[in-house]
Image (cartoon, rainbow, N blue to C red; front, side, top):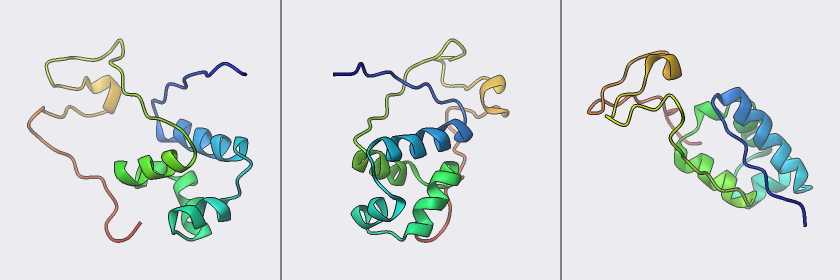
Length: 107
């Protein structure tokens, strides 16, 4: 059995490549993945192309069907006070604030 290698993700571009490779390693077409999720093939293509435009719930559903698990770990640049450093996100976000970047409408 092959060793499982974690893949740190720090950008949606990295996640895009990982999702596509994971689907292909499962020998699954976009159409097959779409059917298992109740979506259309073009929607799966869009999720793979721009995973930053889906909600966390949607991303977790895709990952579940692909047999993947999300693991969040503090990195070297993590400030455990609740503030993300600007160098990680490009903007400072207070712990009490929220940023809504989820797409509107159906996924």
